[in-house]
Amino acid sequence: MSRSKRKLDHIEHALSTGQSRGTGLDDIRFIHQSFPNISVDEVSLSTEIGELSTSSPIFINAMTGGGGSATEKINRELAQLANMFHIPMAVGSQMAAIKDKTEQQSYKVVRQQNPTGIIFANLGSEASVDQAKFCVDLLEADALQIHMNVIQELVMPEGDRNFTGALRRIEQISNQIEVPVIVKEVGFGMSRETAQQLKEIGVSIIDVGGLGGTNFSLIENARRDDPMTSFDNWGIPTAVSIAEVKSIEKPGAILASGGIQNAHDIAKVIALGAESAGMAGNVLKWIRDDGIDRTIVHVESMLNELRFIMTALGVRSIQELQKSSILISGRTKEWLVERRIDTTTYANRR
Image 1 (tube, rainbow, N blue to C red):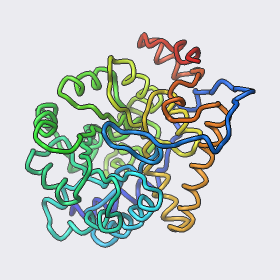
Image 2 (image 1 turned 90 degrees about the vertical axis):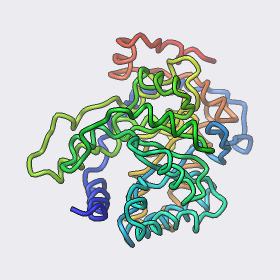
Image 3 (image 1 turned 30 degrees about the horizontal axis):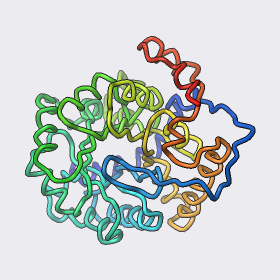
Image 4 (image 1 turned 90 degrees about the horizontal axis):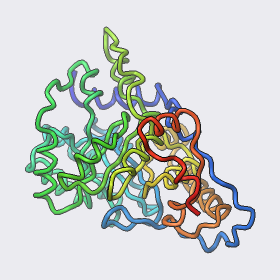
């Protein structure tokens, strides 16, 4: 099967498999404040991702590219959306553009539609320094997202089987390119051990890519003649992943992704410690089902609702929201307690 055809299959299977709502975010509750003493007009949604300043705590996470005109159209509309709301956007893996020059336009359209916006280039951990530089230059990117997708590759019929040297390659790229490096999991979550390893090689921005959103084991199994179901429920839920990464000393900037669907989810991941929330599957579904104009309305409504949530909590900034008190219950609490991560600190921060 061609790489282009595989890209299109991934999109269709992502839309058909949907999201499990297994993020753990339903185990998180805010402590209500009866006297917030604040006006909605006082709320600011601006935040920082490392050295990058953004207007709101959401970004469009990596989805596609390399599938010809169909993926070019998706990326064009996503870039228009990012441009309208001044939010960052990541492209899908650019390996297709490296291997086939005719696919480069399906990525370049993002910068063409969003000439001054924040754009993340994207490659897998198998990439070389030269390949990383090429991808950054192709998009005039502001950061490079390196995705880790071991489980997807193992389930993928034609996937990689050798994962040696990934940390060393990421370290080399981090040391030799001029833009920040974001290391991202692909729907299977991030442990504190992984976060510590990344910190030790100089990575300062981590996207947890937790379990509960688009499930690439299910997607790849849909493409297999002999499904390998061991990994269909594998991984660390998004809520747990954020707390795991946050538990290490000076973890750097945390990006939350994996099944984030609405303003309440965004508020919760920020309260758990994230600087920003990445959305992919839900935005792709909006674009396909409702079109770009209705998607703009969806995003605007979501940001307004986030402002209302922050007002109800009496917080004026994303930094204050990160210090809001939350109760953690259910399986999320069970996991964190077993991992000796103190959940009571979250409930008594104000």
